[in-house]
Each structure stands twice: as structure tokens, then as C-alpha cells.
Image (cartoon, rainbow, N blue to C red):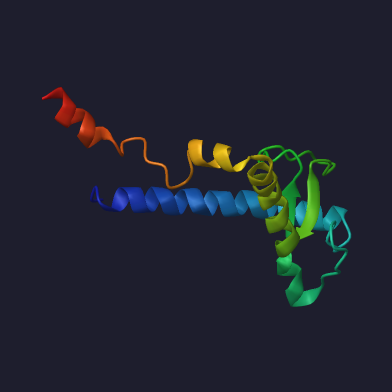
Length: 121
């Protein structure tokens, strides 16, 4: 096996393992709970059932008690909203000056590194 293929195979194996783990708790959640979104109350059946996802209340995907006490069934839209809700609340809580001083996704900790090297000469 070539060294170039090893990372690809490792990633593929990890993705397959994650899918199997998710399928396991998703199947259990679908047996425990009615096929209804816990937020918008939309009902799912047939092909649409794939749009119903398992949300972990504590955000720990390894915490899967047999009684399903850490799960909510949410449609993909409500699940996405659930995970972006905290991000949006934090943005709203920050004032305009806070936003300018706090690192963002575009923040680069090494942006001024070249200037530091010029000063050191």
C-alpha cells in the first residue's frame, strides 16, 4: 500500500465508522419516538423520513443512553437552526466594538508576522 493512499483509506474508514455509529442511534431513536420533529411538529414517513435527524441535547454524540434521554428527533431545518442558534445569540450579544476586537473566522494570528521580522533586522 502506498503512503499516498493511507490517509485516504484512513479517512474513508473513519467516515464509515461514523456512519455506522449514527445509523445505530438513529435507528434506535426512530423506534423510541414518533416520527415527528420535536420543534416544528412536522410528521415524517416514507422517503421523507430521511429528513428526520437525531439531535443530541448535550451535543455529545458518544452519549447515547438506551432510553434515548439525550436525543430529540428534529427535521434537518430545525436541527440546523438548533446548532446555529447559539452562534447567532453570541453575535447579537456582542456590541460593534467587541466584534472588531474578537477573532473571527477570517482572523489570522500570523497576519503581522512579516512586519515582526522586518523590525527584528
